[in-house]
Length: 343
View (cartoon, rainbow, N blue to C red):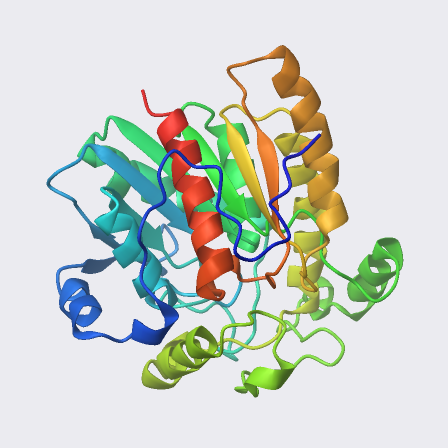
């Protein structure tokens, strides 16, 4: 069976040693601000002249690196604290902003629309980033850390490039989207409403809208008020990264890609850890269970594929932006997993 984290919030993770991470009460401390000045920020130019923004920092004391694939609406600017923590644990860190969001080029006239032509475009961009930026550094061990949509991208990338990463950890992976009614009906409706099929400018899903900051007490992402407010501050200080609802075409592509990712995750080319948010209302945990149940069966017969699912009960969708206790549990579990698969 998949390993489930204890429901007691004070329970210790089953790690060989518990690491120290930053605290939600010290997100904007001077040490983090000083660290970020050392991070290199740049961009790649795609064949169709779009800029794909990325950042990285090389740790001189290690030959191991972690690549972050972030979720929908996100930017690497949101992950300053995470990048700091991973660096302090002895890793070089790389992160990129997917096409159409963050600091990367927008692909719609309305910069707030979350849109993609084909989901495979995300994977193509990620592949270029890996080839031109990450692999040129020749690390001895390379790990993938994905969140939500970034996990879907990472899963499908690994299917295409099975030898790139030593192991991967996907946090609240978008293996299925939490929908109010059946997936087939939602997909059918999105197809009917999709302006792209009529060669028009993309249009929002029903009820979709531009970015607007919401109050903490109505958010679906985290129980940590400090980290939630830090995220809002990030979007206020860099308004160009603000993103609203997805388009109908994005939804169609995402629904199909999520199902492909479930199938791909069932036979991972490298050890895979799924971190599940116990109180997730954004993605469908049942789809993660589908992948994890088969993964566990496979791993029992193949020790080289030590895949597992760990549920963090007291966490919403953004586990790595959660309160300290569930966040630390997730980070310890991820880094333990990476250490187990370090050559």
